[in-house]
Structure formats: structure tokens, C-alpha cells
Length: 117
Image (cartoon, rainbow, N blue to C red; front, side, top):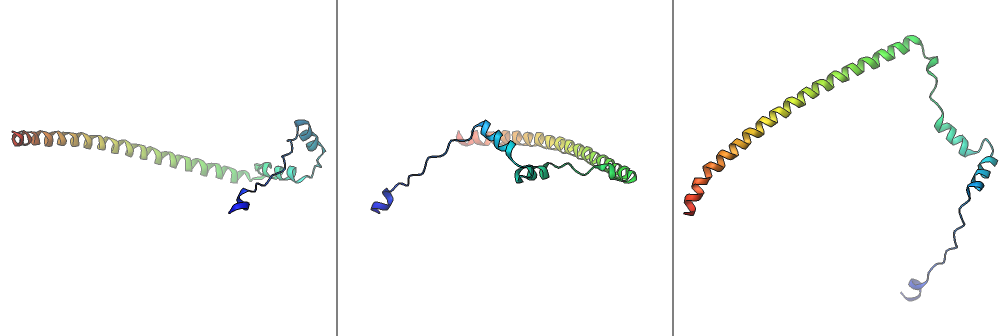
């Protein structure tokens, strides 16, 4: 355990980071087909133009999107109404439960006070 645990590996010092001028000079000097630039161009390429889409198909697609929106909107309205009703039901059940707890507590009080006396 002696000598191996005590040896420290001395790493070489890190080089200073490049200055902004050095980075700009490197970018300006890079060829246009540098993989960095071509990889970024592929990621940022715009979607194919929709001008090539058939006008009938475009109108059908827009109609289908609108119909899906209306259907989803109606489902959300129904779900909202159901949630409001369930919330109201839970509120009533909670009030009834509180009343029952009060009744049970009041019914138990005379028995508790009689047993202690």
C-alpha cells in the first residue's frame, strides 16, 4: 500500500483558450465544405416548400385539421363540464362528511364525559 498510493501524476498545464480573434480567423479560413458547416446546414434546412402541394390536397388537409380542432375542442368542453360536476359532487360529499363527523363527535362526548366522572 505504500509507494503506489503516494504517487501523484502530474498533468501538463492546459493551454490557454483561443482569443475571439483567433476563433474568427479560424472560422473565416475554413473551407465552405467543412463538416461543421455542412452538418449545421443539414440540421437547419427548411422543410420542403408546400407550394408543390396540390391545392385540393391542401384544402382537404386544412379541413381535416379544422375538423380535428373542433372535435378536440368539444371534447375539452365536455371534460370541463364533467370535472365541474364532479368537483361540485365532491364538495357536497365533503360537507356531508363534515356533518357526520360533527354528529359522531357530539354523540361520543356524553359517553366520554360520563366515563371520566
